[in-house]
Amino acid sequence: MSVRPFDSSLDLDDAAAILAARHRGDRLRFPILPASFEDESVVRQSLQETASFATGVAATGTEGRLTGFLLGIRRLPSPGDLDARFTTPRSTMMFAHGHAVSEKFDSFAAYHALYTELAQDWVRDGFFDHVVHVPAGRSEQPWFELGFGRHFAVAARGLQLLSGEVTSRIEVRLAGAEDVDCVMELSSSGSSFHASSPIFMPDMHRDTDRAFKEELARALVDEKQAVLLAHEKGQSVGMLRIAPARGSAMFLPDKSANIGDTAVVEQSRRLGVGSALLRASIAWARNNGYEHLTLRFHTANAQARSFWTGHGFEPVMYHLSRHIDERILWAREDSVG
Ligand SMILES: CC(C)(COP(=O)(O)OP(=O)(O)OC[C@H]1O[C@@H](n2cnc3c(N)ncnc32)[C@H](O)[C@@H]1OP(=O)(O)O)[C@@H](O)C(=O)NCCC(=O)NCCS
Image (cartoon, rainbow, N blue to C red; front, side, top):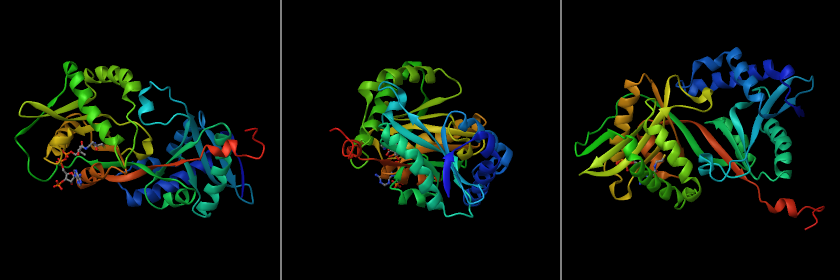
């Protein structure tokens, strides 16, 4: 097997055939994923777009036939950007819809060869955090062997109603522009929780609050999205954001709305507030023409995992990540340090 740069003028047809075949396999396990990506021409178009801005490598077999490919980008968020809340500086990301290996080949050998090529340039240039988005299930194994581990789960469900009791003491309403500070405070209780052990996601609010407040102020007056607030005895005790879903279209069920920041203040957790917010978000999604919900949770967040999967969300994709020990650069033989 040899590896060379991905060439859109040569590789798009074969790459689309390999990726569409992977998606057909994924849909046998997750019928909720969109059927449209079983069609090679739809996949080809999406790949063409991704390859126009990503760096790509292609693996070929003995007769020069494509056996697999991998497309990724470098990410350099500014410290104050909203993205900096979830993206480490100088990281890289390989798209779930930007890699696949033909079923006829050894997937570990192919991904090993492809990642070797991309990773050596990234590490040389000081990009030490590598992220790959991978369909849930057997596609993850080669990446585990390469030193990656789960970080976030991307999960989906339909709009079926929740079972269980509706708690009348909790009221849920739509937030408006005047609620911006209250929403910021509730969101910050979620960020503090994510900063605690064993999740350890840094709470970067000192850097990102300004961008977050501006974005929130826009969201609160945007009819296409909603911030839901839960109240108990006149106190705000929880929030949930919902908006049109974005991201890898191959992993977004048709007509999906995405649930973003969700947080219940510590003293009110496990008393039905989160469920009341989810009920209201299902109603909002139904009223706004959606058919599915998606969201993302940190796999080390036991509360979120049990809350979302207990309410019917099924992980369909994972964000796997690997941190390379920075000492690799100065410990090299040719390093002057
Ligand atoms: C996750 C969260 C929003 C759930 O809201 P909530 O009001 O606590 O949830 P509810 O009381 O409606 O539902 C409780 C159910 O969730 C699950 N759950 C919630 N906390 C749990 C915990 N600590 N351990 C295990 N299961 C838990 C259980 O299935 C539970 O049902 P049960 O009490 O009958 O066992 C809330 O716990 C929270 O804000 N956590 C911190 C921030 C966060 O993780 N946000 C989600 C980011 S994706």
